[in-house]
Structures are given as structure tokens and as C-alpha cells.
Image (cartoon, rainbow, N blue to C red):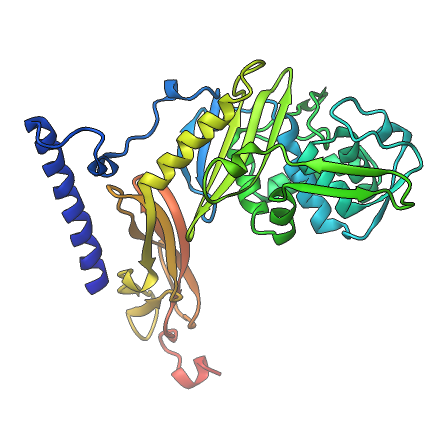
Length: 396
């Protein structure tokens, strides 16, 4: 209870400071634009963002911190290659030799210019794909990992489903505009942020996407290439460490990027963020959303030990109640100063003897208004023998 009270007192103090700050502004004694403004950070108005769809996400928990049409599916251009890269890292070998097919060599700009029959190491191809966004390279990767573009796309869609992406449909590994009988190559900003939030926990992915330049040759050493990272956001804000740009005629400019500040990780996803000649809109929107995250959200810890469990009624048993327990753990969430989550316990409607220890009888949900931020199972912490049975017989 001590930790809970300290947290509540801290939040009450902050609310009082905000109230005092507003009074001082009203009286004209605090200049607007002063350092105290951080206490009253407001989310960007939708009209302030150029992107048609935008999401700011907690890169650890996956909680959406800000959304503008975040669940609308749109073409996502070369941000598609985020999924291509993580699948290659998880299913391939970085030293794998990849052979170029005629189909891969036929891909349009942007392209490395690989030729049919040439061979390359997978790790070099991934740098070319993520830094220069080469479309031919993405097809080489897909064909050598899965055997065909179609099979690789199936794996992309399965992976998206495993990550909980409900508004995503992959057709190509490079993000070129495409449609088939099942739909259009597209994703939501929420889904793209979810995918990158998953990827940034892979060290090789972060190493590749955070690299400024990369040089390599084909396996024969005949041809040499140099790649430069086109993710300008890496140098625009301290802590930026990963991301991918994209553009097609249908998608417009797109971007998905990540920033780390201490233990906090923020991910931004933008779709349809302008068309030529507005390629810089995506950087403006990204900075706006990242700064909002930095100014607004900090970690709060919620211990499962704070959950009030009590006992659960048992019918037909030697005892009328059985004690309950949860695993001891701490859930850490990025919350704004005015947000306060709470544990809410839901138990099964009834429980009949015999009861054994460790039986799952419900769950505790960490809720923020209507949003469930975390779940933990509730278990029985004792046994109850069936009425008329001896405890010795019940326990075996």
C-alpha cells in the first residue's frame, strides 16, 4: 500500500502544480513558452500533421499513445521491407549465398542493378535493401529465403497475423504497388508500428537499419557497391536508432522509425505523408510525434502484489472458500501524468470441489479506462476436498 500511496500522492501533487500553473498564466505571471509548459503538453491536433494516418506507439508494450486514422489500411511502399528484413534474419543465414533470378533482375527503380546468375551474401543484400531501398534486392532475398515471391508473401502475412496485425496484407517483398484477388498491398499505421516494435528487439535488425554506410562486392568480387542510409531522421533527433522510408505513387511518402530515450522507446508510423515535392513532411511529423512522446509519457510500475484477491467461493467442498494468488511480477507502462491505471479482477462464475492448487480461475486486467494494458492469470492458492471425502484420499 505504501508504493500505491506514494504514486497517488505524486500524481495529486502534479495535478495541483498544473492547476497552479494555469492560474499563474491567467494572472499573467508566467510567460507562455516557459519551462512549465511541459506540465501541460497537449497531443498534436490532427490538422497539425501532414500524414493521412499516423501512430505513436510505446515500443515496449505496443500501447498506442497517439493515433490519427491509425487503423485505416493504406499502401505502405518500401516500409514493407521492414517485414522482409526481419523474416530474412529469422529464417535465413547471414552468410547464405543468394542467387539472382531473371525476375529479380527485372525490378524497376529503385534498384541495385543485380544481374541474372550473380551471387551475393545475404547480409550484404539486407544492407542494400534497408539503406538504399533496392527493389531488385528485396526480390532476391524473398526468392532465396522462401523459393518464390508468392511463398515469401504468405510467410509475411503469417508473421503479421502472429504479431496481431489486423489491417495488413502483403503481396510483394519490396512494397511496389500491387493488388490481387485477395486485396491491395497495404497496412495500417498501427500495424506498421507494431511490426517495427517487434523488429527493434533483434540486434541484427537494429545494426543494419542504424548503419550510415555499407560497401560490399558480389561473391565473385567482380562488382563493387556502396550504400548510404536514406533515413534522415537518424541524425535529426538524439536517440533515433532505426527506421525505414518508403514512396510509391499510390502510397505517397511513408515512414516508420524508432527513438530511444533512456529506457523509453517510441515508435512512429506515418502513411500518405505528402507527395512530391513534399518529401520532408514525414520528418516534420516524426519530430512532432516523438517530441510529444518525450514530453508527455513516463514509466509507471504496477505490481501484481497490489491486486486485492480475497477468496473464491467453492460449492460442494469441505471448506466454503479457497484462497487465490497471482504470480508476482511488475508491469511497466508508459503513461501520461494524468493517466492512472488500475487492476480489475474477473473470476469464473462458479467453482466446485474438488479444487487443487494452481487452478486457473480468472484473470486480473490492468485497465486504463476501457483499454486493457496487461493481463495476468489468477490461480487457486490451496486445495478443497469434495464434501464427504477424506483429505487424505483427495490428496492421493
